Amino acid sequence: MQDIDYQRLLKEMVHAMITLRFTDFSRMISEAVKGEGFILGYLNHNASAQPGDISQMMNASTAYVSKVLRGLEDKGLLLRQKDPDDRRKTLLILTLKGKQEADKMEQKVQKAMIAFLKSLGDEDAYNFVQILTRISKKAEHFMTQKEKFTS
Figure 1 (cartoon, rainbow, N blue to C red):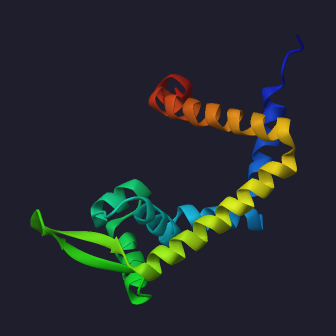
Figure 2 (cartoon, rainbow, N blue to C red):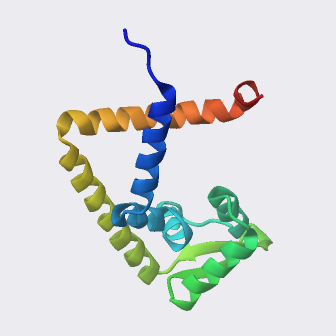
């Protein structure tokens, strides 16, 4: 087997990641998994959540999450209610309009993702998902072991 030039691979990988980051496709996915899109999607699949939980899941400041939540409330997509089990806590719940918006957004993203996977062809789409899954697992493990690699 031929020796791999990891420096060259690194350059190619970084170039590809930067190029991908500035595509409309990447922006659409990013909008769906950050900010309003993340909150709508999360609440669409969970009956309710607390603001602090959302902040933690988004890895975002509570100030940022509060601003996004206010925007969703102003648009009539979200309600805040007192937790019946603990009146000190606030629960976030989608309105009917919020549920409809979340469903519409999810369908749009799914349609685009399926079209993307189909554009790769059957074998490459399958391999892409398998490799992406491996990258996700390796990245998580790598971050727990990073002292070994960065010292």
